[in-house]
Image (cartoon, rainbow, N blue to C red; front, side, top):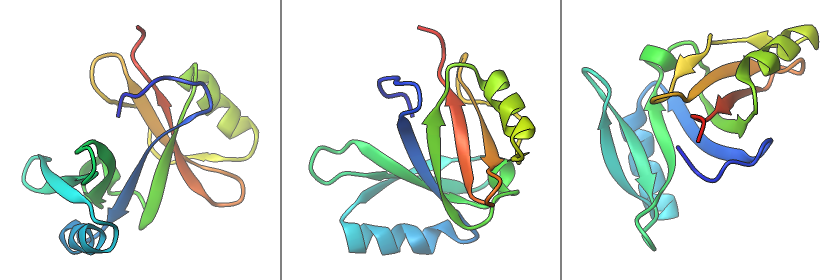
Length: 129
């Protein structure tokens, strides 16, 4: 997920669904992605990769494990400077915290929120560089 960090910037998108295999194949055919399986401890999620340069563009995930609480949604990740401060503001401003902060590698973390209108997204804080 690590890209150049710009506060407020769009960082990543994952699609979370019950049956990721079928949708992996759908997006492979419709968009022209290739895919790479990611072992998740008993099942696989998928990185969807560009045919042009092979770089990973998005993920397609099963609604299991850390994604079990999510509806079928393209979940976008926004960069924040301070995850805890942003989560406090989510609560103060009428949103909901759907998942508590989770580790995303050494020093990086994210949490899924729901805004006051009901839309979901994730807030992402990269490791300090």
